[in-house]
Amino acid sequence: MRLSGIKPMWAVALLVFATATLDGQSLRHRHEQILHHLAAEEWAQAEKALVELRQTAPSTFTRNSYDYLLARVNQKLGKTDAARVEYLNVVKRDALVSEYAYWHLAEIVRAADEFQLERQYLEKLFSGYPDSLLVDRARWRLAESYWESEEYQRAIAVYTEIANGRGPRARAAQLQIARAELRQGQAFQARATLEKRLTIGAPDDVALEAVRLLDEIDTRTGAALSVADHLQRARIYQANRAFDAARRHYQWIIDRFADHQNVPEALFAIGRGYYLQDNYDQAIVWYERAHNQFPKTPAGEQGYYQAGHAQANAGRWLRALKRYEEFIEAYPESEFLSGAHLNAIDVLRSAGKTEDALAWCRRTIERFPGSLPATTA
Image (cartoon, rainbow, N blue to C red; front, side, top):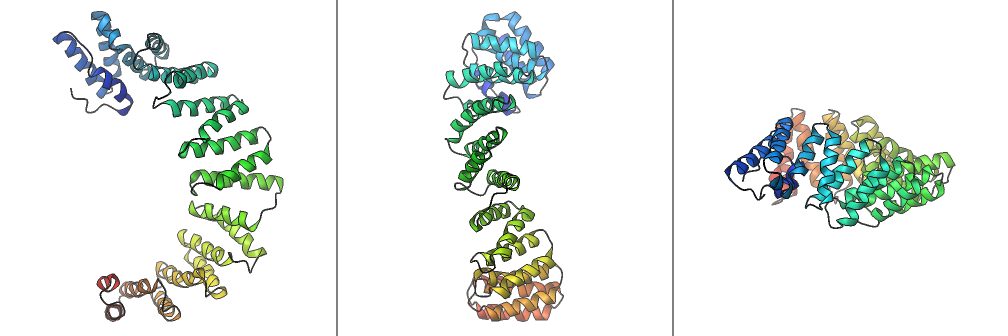
């Protein structure tokens, strides 16, 4: 039986109904017709076909849980009361799709602001069907329900269960715990929760929200931060392209601890942020500072090199060439040496200086014989 065109929301039900036990050609035809209407999102026609099937073959209708499909169709048509009745019939007889019926029942009562009843349905789902694919979503929704009802301590309890797991949802739960603690006026505890979150995992969007909350808390409470705190937050902002926020933390380090070991990184990162915001003139200023103040550090070396890229992106081809030449002379053992040669070729081509570009091609081939840069040149 072909189910192409069926949307994912129907997939679970149709895995059941596609193998439904039907007696006679007429019933099989009705079954095909129902599947066709669902695939085409013809909800009214699907409802009509399902009602007719119930009238024609009630035992077949119930045995194969077509009432679940009818409930889904009614829900799509906005007939939530009718859908609710059908879902309740499904769970009453503990049909194979009962876990999904509970999920949709929870959806319906949630829309009606019946949060207490919603929680009952969700709890029945993950207590009665602990291996269901819906369990994680149901538990998250239960926590949200408590949050929306301002029952923050209960929300924290559920979010804590989720946070003890793994994956994106567990990380997001930690963030929600901190938010709930803030709602309860527990700024100190919220801060501890957020800082714990930052010690694990990647600088992802959850970490970004965590540092934003931390900055908000610390601005309000006047908390004193260490260089490590500022550096950690700056790196997370930078990784998430929140460059303005990153600059504030990097600038704090530069202004107060000019000789700190992380100042070269801070100078370069500010330049990098401006570069990625297409503000090439400011990028050059900060790249040059990184190099001039700390020429023997990786950040100083990269700043000197990247300033050439900024000149090139600003359309100043010959200035870019000059910088690449200076870089090659200043850092003859750099890992970026071959890149500087190839970039010199590119800016000369962009400047329309073909003969000079060819000369640099020959120079690159001689400098890196048998290598990928030589082949590229």
